[in-house]
Length: 427
Length: 111
Image 1 (cartoon, rainbow over the protein chains, first blue to last red):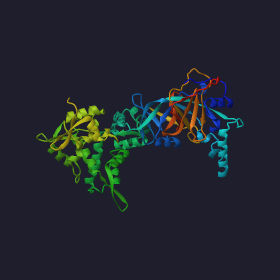
Image 2 (cartoon, rainbow over the protein chains, first blue to last red):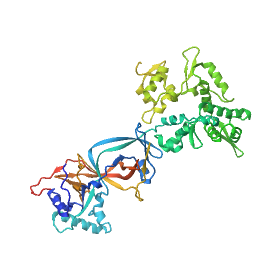
Image 3 (spheres, rainbow over the protein chains, first blue to last red):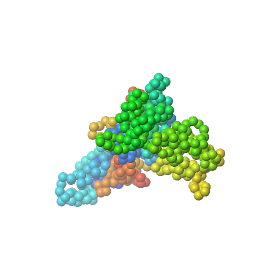
Image 4 (cartoon, each protein chain N blue to C red):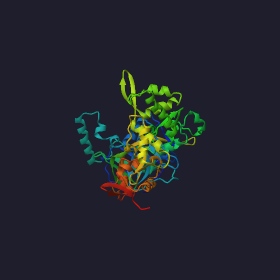
């Protein structure tokens, strides 16, 4: 639609004339006319964007909580609040959105009984009202002049950003940290110091909110050493854990009477205190408190799984029976190993004689889900849901659970009465 | 890379702006310099509905709460660093979605 004449200010008379031509009755309208206009070029703002919010982000904005965009040039940008991550997408609309600061809504444009007479009593306002309706019939000129306010349209929009809650993109975190794994103080000289990252650097690089990042740092067992976040190198973690577990026998502790104090004190010359503290935290739970002393016990499943990974680490297949024996011997006395603990770290083939087991760990699989499924089915043609879950769990979302993922990427069939999944296509 | 949102400038919180949504295209040519009138916006006393006189058309609309609120964000480059600021939030709009009613007049005056 064409815009009208430029330049000179409109007068109430101009506006009245237009109202009349449009066959509207001035008396039916509230007393303020807002003239929408595009301001002078210097006052237009082309740097503005619209972004749809949800109530959580609105609250964050109104309370002044920090929000950030995150993304490298090769990543899709996300928006992070303190505890949530959102996918940012641009959406289009065929309508024009005219953005107007300070626009008056009906309630603020006067001559509305509730506004105009809010100080008056009810009886008065009913009188007013009858007066107003009288005016309609005699559209005369003795009314106060129309109030005119100019309202500038800062810009017109045909697109806006949409935000969708998404999973934080955390896979980058391990990659950022893996080149600087901590292998003990004596090997620190080998570490490229320029690659060490502090918390702020990590928070800026990883597409996740602070809360989600903290969770993941704990999850992947990153430890703060001298202000930098480090992963423990596998062999080093094994060494420290072994020291810790050896103390159980040395001190003849019952499994639920592990002393933190003695553990840290006995090992303080063998590993930095921050590592010991963190490792103790990862691997133990509080058990009993006796006479003011807090005792701990080791997380049995976690210890067993880690020691299984140690045994499975050397490539190749093991005789299942021999493996189970060796595994059981490697854990502290009183802890029990169990085949079910191996889910996600090893695969077992019971269709051959002798039965075999080999290490197969989730975090060594490719990130691309199609590629991952290809490798999974290449390794083992048929999987039950329980078997495959640990390897694809990380792709599941609230809307798309493991079963839905399998429906999408695999073919279901039944084998000996058990539902199994196999590759969708023959390759 | 991370891009921060700077704190909004006013102490009293984030101002609330409004959107006037109309069908079709309302745009200004980049080279048009002075202020350009788009239309006159009135409200009916009776039902508080907005009416917009736009060129030779009358548009009847209504005031609506946005299903999802919007933020008006401004991209700025400060010393070569990109920064966003939340200029305002939008919670309500005037929606003109009905077919525009043409003004038929015999009056010689052009609007």
